[in-house]
Amino acid sequence: MPDDSRFQSGNIRIQAKEGEITVNSLKRGYGSPSYQGILELRTTAEGIAIINELPVENYLCRVVPSEMPSGYEIEALKAQAVCARSYAYRQMAEYGYAFQFNMTEDDLTELMMSMSGTQSASYDNNLQQLGYADFSQPSSISIYPKDFDNKEKVVEVLDHYNQQMEDEGKEEQVISYTDIVGTMMSSVTTIINTISYVLIAFVAISLLVSSIMIGVITYISVLERKKEIGILRAIGASKGNISQVFNAETFIIGLCAGLIGIGLTLLILIPGNMLIHALADNDRVSAILPIVPAIVLILLSVVLTLLGGLIPSRKAAKSDPVTALRTE
Image (cartoon, rainbow, N blue to C red; front, side):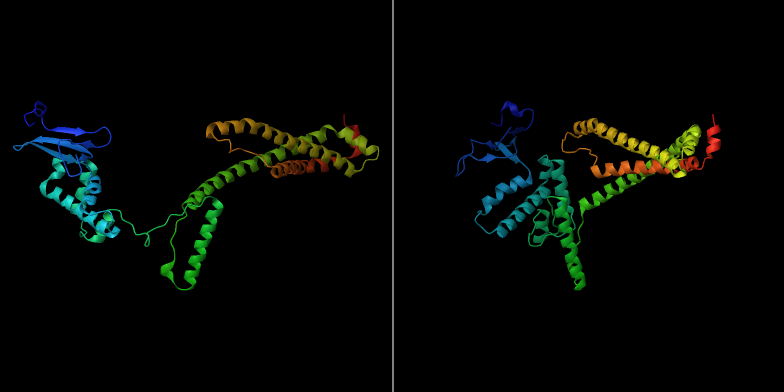
């Protein structure tokens, strides 16, 4: 009743926790009506006014079926939805419902943009505002290949089609596309290549320094073993044999160094992979050392060691056996 004590503090707003609100005191041909959103009760001279507050799109979902049966053609239903939406916005703007009905910020923004737009309220513009899309005339198409190999095949097909259109002089039919994954991978590849070049520079410097140190160590070994070199020359060893002795030593040093490095790398991979799996929470990502690169690294170690010991071995081969025998 209008004189109910609950109206003393103002209007009464009712919102269902879930589902819709049924007003049993109202009777329609199909029974008691149900309402979405919020019901606001106001006292008037004639009694109690019930105002249903809900988003415009929910309003259209109820009003369009009541004005036109769903069996009508889809285009007719679209036109009716456009008319109902435009009429609702016009009524809200004319009578100030937008402020009386406590519209949300998004609804109010949408209303102001629709009323102040420079476009005319045509059928096509209204369909565009409603988000209608004609599948026969798409503005863009998104393609999602299942893997990188299929992505490359899609790019090849598009490039072949574009080249064919250009050769035929049909520039307007050339497809403009953006390979988002390719662009991202290109950026990542550039960063990885830059980091790789920096690491290669550090490795090259390390290899150069290590080769020099091997040469110095071999030269010191030649100086300390002059008497041994003199004895070998005295018993008939040639200069080539002396050089081969030191070359064999450097070969063994390089081979052992390469094997030790590969072995340490394989041991470090065990805790490294455990750390990767723990951080990435994925067992499918693992660091490995392929066999071929491992063999190449061992050969590189041997070659660099031989190059480092080449000069000292030649120095040992040229030593005078008489002078070498007199060395204490």
